[in-house]
Image (cartoon, rainbow, N blue to C red; front, side, top):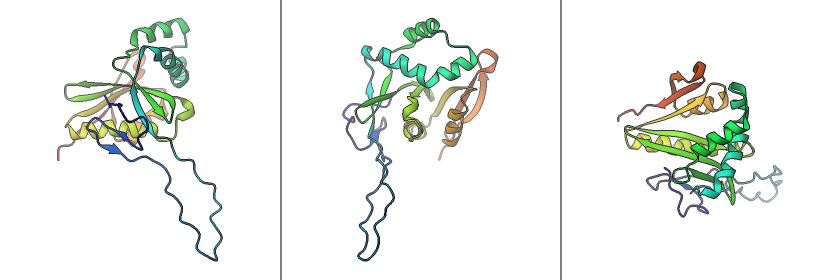
Length: 198
């Protein structure tokens, strides 16, 4: 798990060892020199500090609605969306003692579930609300896990749905490779980031 205590308003996120990850943002622009026109490009809004906090039982409904928003189209493409089945699955899966809530500023924007297994770190689930995707948040979190795996001589392992090509592209960019397919009609891909001894 990536611990969250005390980092809700920190300028950077910490991984398990306490190593801080630099926050993406913009550096202030220097003032225009005398006699030159000022830079008229619109200022980019800085990305809010991203942090993790432990989930609580009160987060169950948030996590269900997040799952529906982030994964609904992929689940529908493979199995179809059955609200009753998905609710029951969520009730069985939700784990407030293991899941973490991803926050940006004051907003809850996602969830994370990580298992530390012998010889590997298994990213069981990462879901970020579609309105907050594409800002590098998932990249930062997965990169922190990959760095932890590298530092401890382990592999980072995860499963991704075959129809979720966007996530697959991200994982490949971060150094994971496909090692197996499984599930009904090969609907899931196992990807692994192999540790390379120095």
